[in-house]
Length: 447
Image (cartoon, rainbow, N blue to C red; front, side):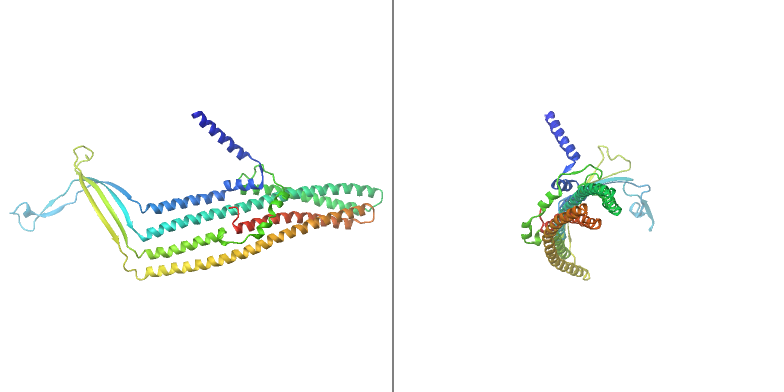
C-alpha cells in the first residue's frame, strides 16, 4: 500500500515540476496559468476564504458559548471587622468592640458558564450581512480574474507584436542591404549620385536602430507577460501562437449579435450586492429596537484554607450553581436610533440610484465597445489593403530607381510608407484582439 502511495506522490511531483518548467505557452495556456498563479488572484481567493470564515464567526454567535474561569487568592493582611463586645461578654461596657477576622487566609474557586442567545434581531441581520459580504468578495475575485485575463491577453499580444516587428524589420534590413550593394555598384560605375548611396545608408542605420530598440522592448514585453502570469520575470518563455492565429480567433462576428444583459456583468453584480448590503444596514438599524433574550447556566466550586492545601483529597469544595435569563429592551435613545435608521435609508436610496446609473453606464460602454470592435475589422481590412498597395508601390519605385528612371527620394518615401503600413497592419490585429476582450468582459463571457 505504501508503495502505491509513493508512486502517486512521485507522479504528482513530476507533473508539478513539468508545469513549473513549462516554457511554451499558447494564449489559452498563458491565461489558464495566470488564473492559477497570479498574485492578485491568490489574494482575492484569500479574501473569499476570509469572508467564509467571517460567515462562520457570525453564525457561531448564535450557538452555545462556554466560558471557564479559575482564581486563587491569598490575603497578605486579612480584613478586620469590629463586632460589639456584648456579643461575647454581656458585662462588657457599651460602645466597646472586639476585632474579628472572618474567613480563611487563602481561597480558590473555579466556575464554568454556558450562555445561549435565544433571540436577537441584530444577530439575524448580521448573519445575512455576512453572507452578502461573502458574495461581494466572490464578485471581487471574479473581477480580479477578469482583469488578469485581460492583462495576459494584452501582454501576450504586445509580446507577439514586438516579435513580428523584429521579423519585419530584419526582412527590411536584408532588402535594403541588397539594394545598397546594388546602388553602390551603380555609383562606382557613375550611374547614380553619391547622395543615393548615403540615403540608403541612413535608411539602413535607422532600421538597425529600430531592431535594437524592438529587441529591448521584446525583453520587457516578455518580462511583463511572465509577471502577469505569476512566473519569475526572468523565466524563459516561448509563445506558441502567432499573431495571425490570434487574429482569426478574435474575429468573431457572432459576438456582435449578442444582446447586452446587465445581470451578466460583474460590475453590475458588485453594485447589486452593495445595494443588498445597504438594505441590510436599514434592517440592522431597525433591529436595534427589538429586545435581546439570552439564557445562561453557571456552575462552580469554592475552597477555603489557611494553607495552600487545595489539592489534597480531604480538601472541602463547596458547590454553587445558578440559572439566569436576561432580557434587554431598548426603551428610549433620545431619537438617536431614529436618526440612524433614516441615514441608512438615505444610503439605500443612493445605492438604488447608483445601481440604475451603473446599468445605463454599462449599456453605453457596451455600445461603444461593440462599435469599436466592429470598427477594428474595418481598420484591419484597410490596413491590409494599404500594406498590399505600399508593397507594390515600393517595388515599383525600386525597379524604377534600378532602371534609372526614378530617384532615391521617391524610393525612400515609398519605403517609409511601407514601413508605416507594416506597423499599422500589426497594430490593427492587436486592436481586434484587445477590443474583443473588452467586449467579452462587458458581456461577462468566459468567467
